[in-house]
Structure formats: C-alpha cells, structure tokens
Length: 428
Image (cartoon, rainbow, N blue to C red; front, top):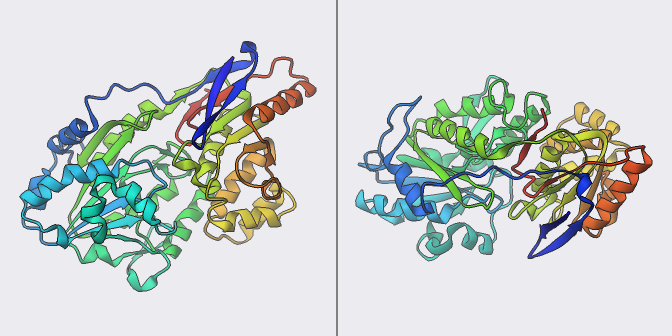
C-alpha cells in the first residue's frame, strides 16, 4: 500500500503492506449543485428562516441600512471569504449602501490579528477595494467591549462594540465538526469570534466537560454559552454559511436566519465529515491540512479526531508542519510543567486558563496512547508536551508497527485520515 501524505508545499510517501490497512477515511463525497458562485447565489435566493420557514431575502434585509457590519473568519479557517464578499457586494450596492459605510470585522476570537499577507488571503480579489474597511477584533482590548450580562453557565458576555454601532450585521463562516463546540460556524461568529478574552476563557473552560465534543450540540455547555449570547444582540443579523468538501471546495451554502442557516448547514456537514470506519485502529495517521497546519494549537484537532478511532495503547501519528509554531503558549507551558499527562490533568482541574482545554484534550490522549509528530517543531519542544518527534511519516509508522508487534499484535491495523482536522471517524 502506497499513500501520499501532504506536507507544506510538498508530500511524503508512506509505504506498508496492504494487510495492515484498516481504512483511509476521508470526508464523504458530496455532489455540489454548481460552481461556488452558483451555490452562493442559490443560497441567497433560497434563504432560511427560523425552523424550516422561508427567510428574509438579502435585499429585504439590507433595505434602509446605512451602516453595515460584516463578520469574517481569520486566516486559520478555510472559509471562502473572498467568494462570499463578491456575492454580497452587488446587493450592497443595489441597496445604495456606500462601501465606505461598511465595516469588515475579522472575528479573530483570541487569535492574533492577521498579517498583511493573511488579509490578502482573506479578502483575495476584494483586497484593494475593502482593505481600508477591514479591521481585526482584539479580545484583550476591554475598551472595545460591551458587557451584556452572563450565560446560564455563568460566563460573562462581553462583545465587540462594533455590533452596536451598526444597523445591520452579516455573519459569514463555514460549518464543519469542531472537537469541543460540536460544529464551527453560525453562533461562533459572535462567541468566541468577537468576544472579550475573559468571555472566551470562561466559555472554553466548558470544554473540559465530556459533553463538549465533536458533532454534539444538545447538552454541550460550550454551545449553550454561544446560544445564550445571541438574544442579547438586538441588531438584525443575516447569515451566510458554507460547507466545504474534502478538497476544500464549496459543497453547499445556506443563508438567512443565523441559527436556521447554521442548523441546515450542520445536516450537510454531518453527511460529509462523519465517516464510518470498520473498527478502532492500532495506529492512526492524522494529517492537518492547510490552513489548519498553521500551528499545533489548530492542528490538535487532528489529534482529537484521530483518537476517536484509536485503540488504547496504540500510536497516533500527527502530520502537520506547525509552520507558525506552538500557537497560544499557555497550553504547551502547562503540559511542559507537568511530570506526566495525569499530572497535567490534575493541574488543569486546580486552575483553568484559556488554552488549558487544549492541554486537557492532548493529555487525555497521551494518557492512553503514544503520540508521534512529523512537524517543524523541535524534538525537545515536542517531548516536553509528551509527543515524540519523527522526521518523516514513514519513520513514525515503522516505529509504530515495531511497537505494536512487540506488544503481541501480529498484524497491526492502520487508519489514515488525510484531513484529520475535520474528519470525524465513527468506529461503532
């Protein structure tokens, strides 16, 4: 069996006997109804209201607007923001809204602001016309936040004041599985997208709950927090959500009511990203594809998804360049300060800081399996967070096979996830 594994701008070969292959699990095929432009145009015509009702059209929504706010994802997400903006601009102009009265707010959450190269990546062909209207949310700037109260879980709700300076809001995004929020998209544009740091910290603390997991919405405390913020936003909101396929092309789009369009996109995302596999594997090779290979903080999603289909005592091989390094240092520093994954879990329970949910998820996997990584991170840095370094996927796989055979497994079974950050294996 020969498999090609993507890495940065190149690839790695992976070779092993056919008898070892359990499955290559990729997002399921989905027949798109047309080109990206056609799919977006159709979504803007076939708008969704609350429940399954017909939604307000974009033209109706924009009528009378004088100050429009558009929320877009940062460069860590594969959302086709350029295409979405190009689909919106004709309607904005038709409504006689001056683009100079539009603000594009990059919903960074607690991430850093985009670099100029990343602004270009986000805006694409719209860069020259819209860059001067584009600003980045800064979660740490409390002066830019409005306090709206608390959620049912006690999370303080502080959101960017730009929400309250606009008379219309358009939320854009992409919907795919998320390892503790259930799914990305929809309500995430607001929380954590444009929330204060302490709001995000308390919301993400809920990720320590076993109910906070991929594909789960009902009973998920992270999702509940996000939902509790929405009724406090009185400005009318219109939503455009996309669902991407395994090639990161637009498979579908939904538009209209924020949650109506989100839930419709969730149904499609489940069909694409929830993938049946025959059983749990002895070895899982999970790849973090661009742009999720930006750092370990984002690439960890490939570890979490891979672990779903990994036997206890097995080996998980992460393939991700982590080209920008570790990401938020808090989770890595916590892991590095601990003597073992179990010790790390105890420290997290003693006092939570933003990012520790990431440490908890990683420690939970390290407690029951070996994690190996092919990345640009140093071996010393990886070792400090209970991950072994390999120079190539082949080196990591050969070592994992030796380890499994030494443990008495005659024919170790291998599961490969070519897009591990969004593929949710179902071994049931």
